[in-house]
Length: 329
Image 1 (tube, rainbow, N blue to C red):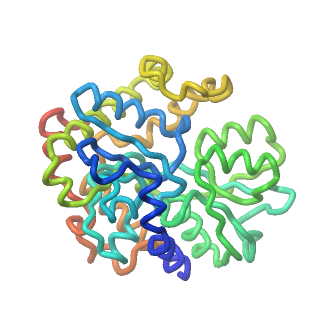
Image 2: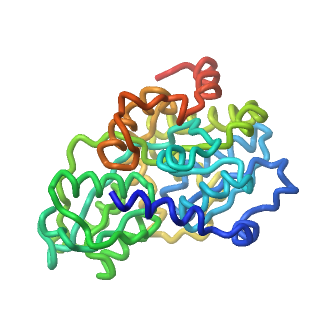
């Protein structure tokens, strides 16, 4: 499991100067500073809508897009961001950082895919390079778990943030084996149905993206965090009930104003495919225990799943309070 050590190395390598340039200065810490380890695309549109709704409820939010989840996590640990987005389980266990997950944003819904000019099945990937979203991400965990299950070992792992970017890299021939989301699968099946094969993937249920924050921030800003959590959970429920609402809300809040017609056309299909991956109740303890099962098998977490404690990774106080207000589904 050498990839675990590799996963943690960039956290120590990120310089304070680079973070200070990329993020708002700590002196203006009044707004809620949210760090995305991704780019703004159709994939993030639902969350951007929820952030706008939290702003309408009086929460001032500064959003920064960074090139990787590693940097977003380091920003939270160093105090240069208040809330991060990603999958910080390995960070929490390895570094024992004073941060906790407080909301599950999405469950894994991904599709390993290969260029059939080079590969046909999992066995063909032995000794080959693959591409995933980022270090410690659910995409990396899935691909590592499948490698273990099929008795293979990759020669290297390339980190290519954004499922849309990886889909484009496949079509351009720059990547030969990777993992994409439902939107990417539709594009590949539409544009080059004979060129790509989707590899079997069974029994994977775990968190893809989560929100996390410093424990002090959660306790000192519980009202603002509760407003944010409520905005996200209620937006998820609305999207699950009617995925077409995302397109109209994008226009209402003037989000992704430079989106191409092709991107806009993909909004409804993407969220129709994603609606089952949006947690209606924010994850919570059940999601945490499911993650322990998945991430210990995949290697992102060490030890036995039954020995891991929810409170060592999650802070449920705000989520439980919000669900007490809006109910569960």
